[in-house]
View (cartoon, rainbow, N blue to C red):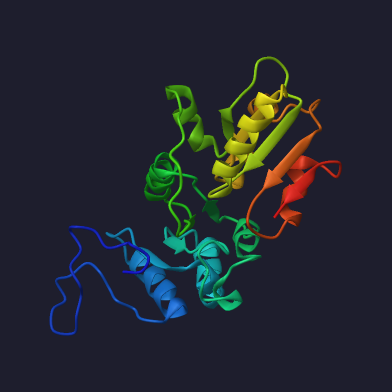
Length: 249
């Protein structure tokens, strides 16, 4: 319940009644994820589970096995940063997102609003050859305006959310809760006469699979002034900003 994964059609599965479709695993992240692997391998179901992002550490081996076996296992990881983190450092993830992204055959999404979340869920349900991690914040986030082309480009993992006239002087790259910050920063810089582009990159693995022409259209190689913003470990983002870029994490 703390992950908000129950829905109107949820029915708890209990020892007395096996007709339900929602298992309350308790504080048992590894067992939950391993059981879901078994449910997926059995066939006939698309299992999803949920815990705080920090506690994917307990489930890591089972998720790695899902990736190795190409099992459709959807994991919802919430409370994804220090935002509203009154439980302290033990509950505040730092390196976990990077770890998931570095796992071969793992698709990792960190949406910035409801629209990106809906696209991420759709792709996770459609994906049959591996697990997907859906990473969500706890705090409320602003909804971003998009046209039809931008909505279609969300599935590509990274796209231009806000753009300037002509060649950008600076590109801001952000994910999840930090997209709102990047959009606000771009608005301030634009008011000061700067040409700024904001790139939302909810899924780096999906973006990396796009052809070179599309990736160049989003992150033109001749624009080296780049800043990546994400509430987590910074090192992962050097592949997108270059050694001359900046990372705020």
